[in-house]
Image (cartoon, rainbow over all chains, first blue to last red):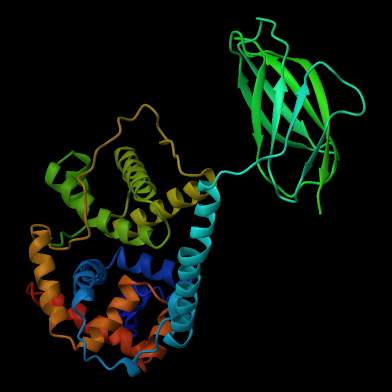
Length: 226
Length: 183
């Protein structure tokens, strides 16, 4: 590579700007490793570039406010779509939703929670199994009480009760701690969109070592009132 | 850093283990190797690995008398670095030295500062002065290119300039930087 040509074509600047193709880059490197003038030029240029990054990063904070914005095209980014024409109506909608929730929805829920009300209930006996279990009637989405009787055996420190819906899918699983002298537990089943039909409750005893064994199952019939 | 001619005497001093010659060699070629490798390797570790291996192999070759043209020392170092780099690409990040019995030599740490004794702060100060003499637009142009590493064609389009403008801008800034140190 001819040194005069290197200087004339600003090869150092092209190199530092990454403009040279791989062959030209290799050739230039072969040149400046042997040419002290070009070596100094490259080193000075590289040092200037590296230090500029430090200085320019600081100066980024104090870019002149009267820099003509029109001279520079805005960079596309995540928030360019969030223009006032879109953001303001969106925020108004969000405020309306929040207002409705705070003024209407939450007070209603609070009233419902704090008021006493009757729940349908049924008593089921684990260990008695057969068709035609007790029937319980509930409104759509209404919860109910299950009084679950488990014959005491003094073996298991706790039980696990699994409820299966008419299609055989498990709805929930509940841990019941065994208590001396107690053989019936009131289970509040939360309201849900349930299908009418036969529900099965399977109870398993769990040993201290974590091993579980079915101790019995029972069923009940849910009727959904219209 | 003052340039020392790479001649027979220089090689002899290197071969004899002259510390100043070694320090100069490490600083001079270490800087060039670092600049060369920055455009090819991402991690500082990889750059350092290749640099050290290049120097190790060089000194083994020097000891074995395989370097016969001191005036082409730079080309030799560059070629050696290319070979080490090629092996690095083929083998992955970890490279073993050619001679396991060779004591790993710790060469002086080199930056790319061509002026050796110049403190980093002084360099930064000089660069700051040069940048302050540029127009705000030119400073922003350099920032978009070097700091934010945006596509250069896009930046030139945004600023309404061509690539040659960018080269000239860098050329003038670099010349100004060199001039401040009497070169």
